[in-house]
Image (cartoon, rainbow, N blue to C red):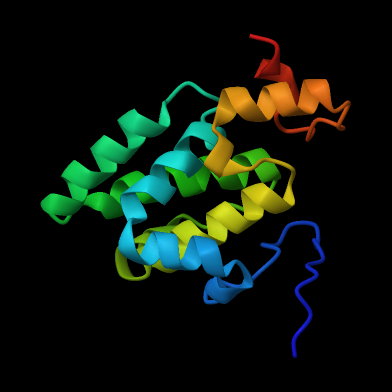
Length: 146
């Protein structure tokens, strides 16, 4: 049985694009409700500037006309910048155009591994970090005290 422990290598994703079953609950949720997972991710990546409801609605509307790839790409690029991952514009466009469910799952896993739980939302994560005296992930610190 494979180990569920993930190791972060600097400048790389902690898990592969097709490692969706590393987080089976998120995998199933994203399979049936990708707009919700995208909304959760977007709220954390934007540090609360975009609400989960707004991002979910936007993604749903874009999915209905087949244009969701650009929106997913936008947040994947922002996540890369937050985590210091190398910029790969072409690859990210292809990933969100062809494998959007896998990309959304990978982004969700990455956020969780770096100390944020997208299912809780931005405000709840901030409160959790404050109340539990948890070390705040460094990429969230500057805007956390809004």
